[in-house]
Length: 215
View 1 (spheres, helix red, strand yellow):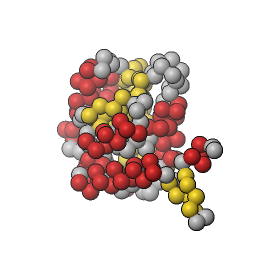
View 2 (cartoon, one colour):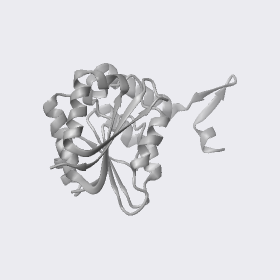
View 3 (cartoon, rainbow, N blue to C red):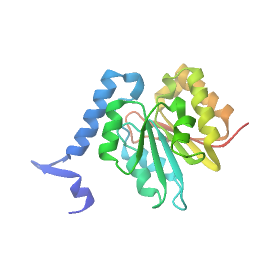
View 4 (cartoon, rainbow, N blue to C red):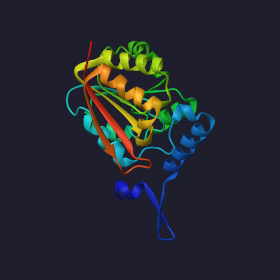
């Protein structure tokens, strides 16, 4: 059977997600109900979003990629598929259930149970001082200005000279006070801030791709 066939099972002429996919949604919704500010989303992000995000991932050498708030790993597979054999893929996740889910379903990712606010300390504990890409799915618009600044400062500091920082936010969130504050903070932290919208997601996703930290 093909990979696509392996992921689905036909039932009465309709294609339904497999058990692993149901598990992903169950874990996601369980965490969202208990702590909506941790997830900041209505559903896991789509494959179209994952494919776009993965484009910033290096395909040669021994790169280090860090995901902040990988959740159920809806982006992780596309990132992993693009990475070369000797890369390191780190996931920093705050939610207990999400950490367990990631360790069970994405065993190739080094999942760390921790807070993105402690990014530098967590990476030091993994003997990592520089990374090639930081990809964030944390709910930036829900964070205070102090927390936004703290995480962005650390992310900018650990990037290699040619590294990139990518943040995902829901398109409607960019118009909120927290979303506008986050956009200003990105402009103050990076020399280059490029935006891209993926419409094939509900709701649509705004990508911020940032390079060349300032200061």
